[in-house]
Amino acid sequence: MSDRFTLIAPDDWHVHLRDGAMLENVVTHTARVFRRAIVMPNLSPPVITWAAAEAYRERILRALPSGEQFTPLMTAYLTDSTDPDDLEQGFKRGVFTAAKLYPANATTNSAAGVRDLDNIGAVLSCMQRIGMPLLIHGEVTDPDVDIFDREAEFINRHLRSLRQRFPELRVVFEHITTEQAVDYVGSADQGLAATITPHHLHINRNSMFSGGLRSDFYCLPVAKRERHRLALRRAATSGDPRFFLGTDSAPHSRAAKETSCGCAGIFNAPHALESYALVFDEEGAMDQLEGFASLHGPRFYGLPLNSTQVTLERRDHLVPEIINGLVPFHAADVLPWRVRSSC
Ligand code: NCD
Ligand code: ZN
Image (tube, rainbow, N blue to C red; front, side, top):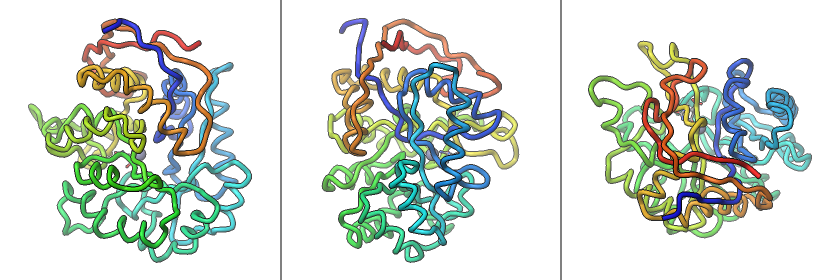
């Protein structure tokens, strides 16, 4: 195996860039490697209208180091009362690339999310008509359902019927964590795809409890059994165009992670491509990395491929324990690949 690997520059199809000081702290890590990113709208308050998304996009662009070639692709946060006209206008103006469905209270800043899919029927038919992708946090919120079963249950209770009602709607099942999701997406038609995070390819649920309570490995959807991690690794490295890169990098301050009610989210942006590269290398599938990282996503979204390239070099790199007050994924680990240059 060669010690260098060059690929078309990748995109991150699911990232949390936050706002204010945190935005300035994290956006450079994403922009270092990724040319575009789907930016999640779960700010406080959430990004609901196209005007709010346009203003947020401006703040992201202002936070970038000068000369950085990075395009934030904005998303709308769907609520029970989202106005389909505002959504359509935002999409047609090129402000919104997609809309995000958070079931109410499923995850961080989702209290204003959708309580019942029946409340957004008009919004979904509008999105289907105009070709605007729907990005789904696919977990049921029913407290009677075990947290490890919430994703699989979402497929059965909601996703199948939603896709029957809106067969032409383009859907991304975000950050999948189970073999049920892999099987469901893998057997679907072209209109359904899924993102896979680096952390769900590396850790299983034991990581959260290894030697104590490890809040750095707590995210939503929560990591599952080993069997599921292996199914995700097979899907990511399979070459199937329905699976593509979405880091779900979700930074929270140390204090917000280590408290009696710690936040869900893993900050993986500083070494995300290197983290995926390790997985593909371990699986003997480096030849599939470019498809997963740089080709499948743009093709699903109907966007051009990036015109620049990125080179990974086999070079041991110690991941810092903390980066600007945030604990990165792989903290204190040595990663064997490093991004060398963009050209
Ligand atoms: C995300 C966050 O912190 O915004 N957290 C996470 O654990 N992934 C929200 C989300 O994507 O669920
Ligand atoms: Zn997310």
